[in-house]
Each structure stands twice: as C-alpha cells, then as structure tokens.
Length: 138
Ligand code: CDP
Ligand code: MG
Image (cartoon, rainbow, N blue to C red; front, side, top):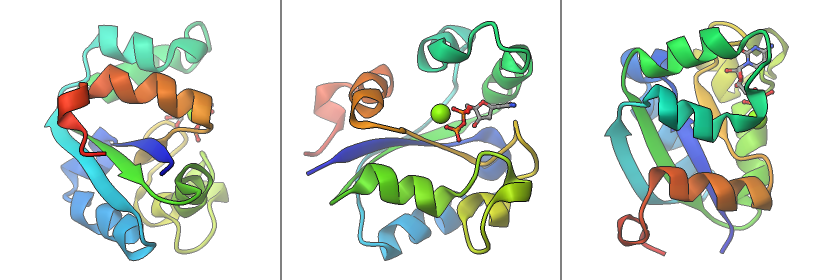
C-alpha cells in the first residue's frame, strides 16, 4: 500500500484542528499507520525542507515550523500521495479549492496548515525523518 507523510503544522494544530483534518483523510478512506505530536527542531526542519534552503521564505518557514507543536502522521492507501495533496489544496490558501484543508484551516502561504509528500521518492525520504520502523504499523 502506498504511504505518505503528513505534517499538521503549528497553526492548524494550535487551533485544535488536528481531529478535523484527520477526519477528512479518514473519511476519504485512508488509514493512519503512524502518528505523534512533536517539536520540529531547526535541524529537523533543515532535513525535511532541504530543497527549500536558501529560498527567501526559508527563515520564516523554519521560525513558524519550530515555534509550536506539530503532529506528524503517516497515511496509507491507494494513490494516497496524490489524493492527500488534492484534499490539502493549493500551497497558497487563497488559491485553494473549496472544501480543501488549506481553504478551511490555513492562513497564508507560509502558515498553510499541512504538509504532504509530493511523490513516492519524497515520501520514502520524508517518512524516516519522523518515524522509526517500530513506530509505523504497516
Ligand atoms: O507544501 P507544498 O508542497 O504545497 O509547497 P512547497 O512549494 O513545497 O513549499 C513548502 C512550504 O514552504 C509550503 O507549504 C509553505 O509552508 C512554505 N512556503 C512559503 O512559506 N512561501 C512560499 N512562497 C512557498 C512555500
Ligand atoms: Mg512541497
């Protein structure tokens, strides 16, 4: 079964929307096979967002992601990578479709409620940053 990494970012987690967001994924048929509340350190942020280092928004992104708890989740299901990105909506919530997680719960281009892996390669790279093998039920 295909797997994807989701991060419920500090904005959405802090506003108690973790349950609302997980319900959207569960209602779409996806299984939660790993989950934890945690602090993203600058070191972890640099690993996870390695391809964004040096972009103008990177310092603000790290500041945002490390300031308050996040929830890391692994979801499993058929075509879960593409479908969860569709459920999440566009990176900029102003451009996100009605009913998507980002339309419902995000504030702006940085504080945009959720992360989800964008390919099988990304998922395979990102999941072990957050979870050890014995923390994933697959
Ligand atoms: O998260 P997604 O894959 O949709 O977008 P991305 O282009 O891979 O960017 C990763 C994250 O960096 C976004 O989710 C935003 O939190 C942040 N970002 C930002 O703050 N400003 C931008 N102009 C682009 C991205
Ligand atoms: Mg991305």
